Amino acid sequence: MDNNLQQVVAGFKAYLKQEKKKGRQAVPKSASQETTPKSSTRAAATGRAEAVGQLCQQFADCQNCLLGRTRKKLVFGEGDPDARLMFIGEGPGFDEDQTGRPFIGKAGQLLTKAIETTINLRREEVYIGNIVKCHPMKNPDTPEMRGNDRPPSTEEMAACLPIITRQIEIINPEIICLLGRTATQAILKSNEGLHQLRNQFHTLNFGGKDLQFIATVHPASCLYDPSNKKYIWEDFKKIRDFLKKTS
Ligand code: URA
Image (cartoon, rainbow, N blue to C red):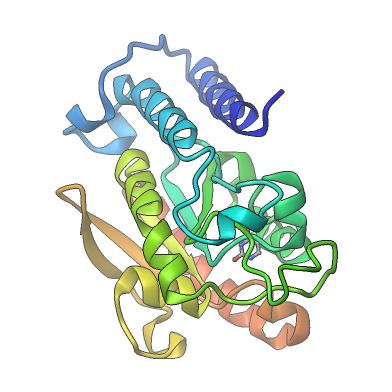
């Protein structure tokens, strides 16, 4: 099956599983018509899954920047389209480019473990995306080389930002965790350092709704400096407490 189609199907499956668990009937209504708090809506969820799937299809062959020429797979994002919590990273690395899935390399495994052990959610229950959807490489002539990653350029981020913006609007999570400096500065539109911005809530309006954001260090930074894990635990506990309060 085509990678993008797989992502759409996976999104639907996650949604149906969740509905079955709650004993709900799927009664679709447009996600954009939703006015009630996330915890009490049900009809909008199918609308969200459809809208995310359509967005994914719309950008399946994206060539809005040069990264489109060198990618193996576009990494649109994955998870529950009805998630209360969303994560946004910088952009795909080698493993993500090979598979079309976000955060599945070593940094992703660390992220998954932290979600499960600190926030007490399964990876399938959150939504994970990136600022850019294609792998930025230092040397695009050697795509099979590991460690060939670089941060996305300003132009690449500008070309891709409309997609993550729309993903945020559709999914409409209660809280969004920004992973690392690049994602944090791009979304908060700030030049301040990550440690000035992390461990506090930021409110931003997306699609006419005020949403809560919290920034933390990029999980990859913990691979070369494990002492950075303490920041992730600290910030994730804030997320866990926030979700407890609003449920
Ligand atoms: N780093 C990111 O920022 N995103 C991924 O998907 C993987 C690694």
